[in-house]
Image (cartoon, rainbow, N blue to C red; front, top):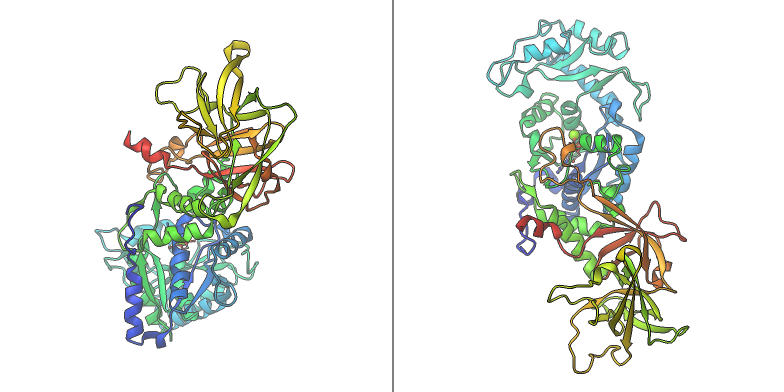
Length: 558
Ligand code: ATP
Ligand code: MG
């Protein structure tokens, strides 16, 4: 899909729900859930799932639960629980009622497991994990029955209770559903539904030493919460028969419908919590919320707005076929938002001093400039002009090529929101490095064209005496390669220059009042926001959210 494509994106799930509502299925209710495992921070892929689940609930006046799928305590933590809640709220969604946890239902899962054993549909198995793998068979060979498959119901009940009481070692026994070892679908070959893990759980402490498996816990949680549509990613398609088997076998009152959709893959990006955790643990970035991370926390700190992420998720649509979305689309979404909403300001990243020789020493003028070129309601700001200014070193060339419209010896350029100046003299320091420019200004060019000559270039500037020194952090893509997610080793595709810190950029003084959350377009440089973690009132730090144009699109065409 291109940026200009304005056709409404497809969402086949809405068609299914429309049909269900017409047929009066689920008494006309729509109830979804977002079920993250608290084993890492959420990433942009999860944003797609959040926007889908909460968006559908909103659109159909239904409900959406936030449920932590916390059945794997070793990898989970309260830090992750907190970050996930914050991210969902920040995206602008409200979950129905209290936050739910799969662990809220541990007793019910246990009771349902006892019911399965009692009806001969589950058994305690003593195969070691290696043996179990061997017995499971392959895609082309059926599995073999476990020697414990026909264990007496009574004995199973006793063993399962002893598992719960902590009488066995981790891995010594498991509880398995009795489905079909010869099923072509490996998920149906007597899947494990409980395993022994003597670990502390972040919600239930040491209450349990047996923990249910995802496939078993998920469908029952959905049914307990009377979810109507259980939306998940395509890799669960082969698990759907098992989802239905548990609910049918347990004769659950409610039977949610599992519907699979394609996960979001973004080029130049890793979207796997496990790999993102590696990136954090190895110190390749400064944390989960490092502005280079594709986590929601990282995007937030980078300066993305909730609206831009929601628009992006809308634009990519929801389908059943896997594809890779161009990172440029995400960047387009934030650029589009900030173009309309971010006030303009000037900030010089590589300062070069300019002395306006015909401007009186000690004089200052306060020029007026619009905060936004198209939105008058944002008002104006005062910009001080004085004899000494900074311009950007990259806006001057001593021996420019033809068609160079910025500043050069004996050439004119317009200072943005101010006058036309001409470069009369270049002053160099040791090694021939340009240190200062002596220029003259034309005082009749404020807001007016110069008489009798054309000046094409416009450059930004700040007054030396009024300039506000700030730190600017220029971020780029974390990976140089389109598919860092292929294979396990993404290290070779890390972009070594994904962060460039500019310690002494010079900003216009109106920025001194910027507070956390402030966003600007630094004219000609891109969109920037105040860093929410490191910035201090007396030492402002700005993150570049995105450049003004998609420089990578150009790269690719080269
Ligand atoms: P990861 O592989 O990154 O750990 P996960 O699927 O294990 O992802 P969960 O916490 O289980 O992470 O995901 C919560 C929900 O978000 C699930 O319903 C999952 O299908 C969905 N989800 C995860 N990744 C994506 C993605 N890239 N695109 C869309 N939905 C996703
Ligand atoms: Mg998962």
